[in-house]
Image 1 (cartoon, rainbow, N blue to C red):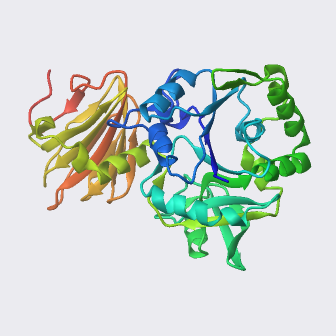
Image 2: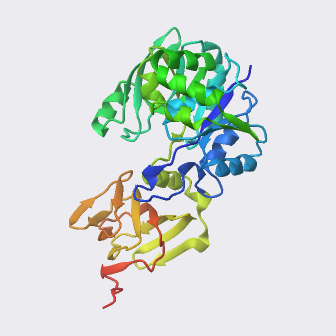
Image 3: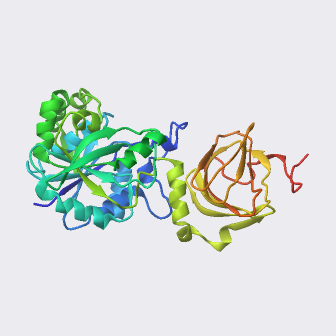
Length: 401
């Protein structure tokens, strides 16, 4: 029996747009000829997978169908959530549809992860297929590349060649994250692998309210053109919980598949800047290089309400003391040690460190050292043009009186 991929595609990606009521969900953002959802669809074209189930809502159904068409996936089922109830009801409802046999393995992907070596992931999934039973759950751990506070972690111990999860640590501070990594902790990726009967058994035991109402929502669902329209009245009564809190914190039958692959959920502009910095040669065009008295910058990608640049500040180069009316900025230092002015504060940053410049904040970059400074910059706002610069001081005489 093939593995059934289930794509969770209801997230709004609000961490990228905290002050906007209307924004583009992360999985549908064009990052330069590709989107995260199409990367996900391309990942499941392996012959180990059956046709996919996509769990989403009415807001995104057109975008989902557009992405399916772009990835040339013609056979699929969509489960439409009529209310936001977090991941637990979404995972259960998508498993309960009649097309899925009771003992079929289900691989739950999120639609907004960047996985650069998918073959290693698919190989690990297929290898562990025989270890699934009617109770257990497999999660996927990613070997940390840094003590990030943006991800959850877990610890595990090996029993008979199976990594048994012993503890979860939810988004620790950096000092705690360093300790967890020393204990061989892994990032919790948010992907799950289990059989349909395991989902049913775990929800019946630990979340009877969610099971009862999701079962009604699926039983009373209307079906048309590959879409299950879940019954709103029943689904709305299901308790809103994440799968982690609903099931993983209750059951003791959690195993881990550990991976050492490039992975990110691109959940922050810091991670997005790092992604562009790592792949800048793919986006570089000579015509997009602009020279200034302090050095130069290159526009790597101009997206929808965001612009990615690389700044090059030559030794002794000083940008003007400035602010912007229409954009905020996120910086990731990739080379050198810039001296930063941010309102009344001054500090030096090292490679790998980040700076956030809120809209309207007065700021400046200086390079007082002999090595050049390189910064990947993400501009976010409604106007992303050089005209949106108010200069207060400038050593090159560019302040207009």
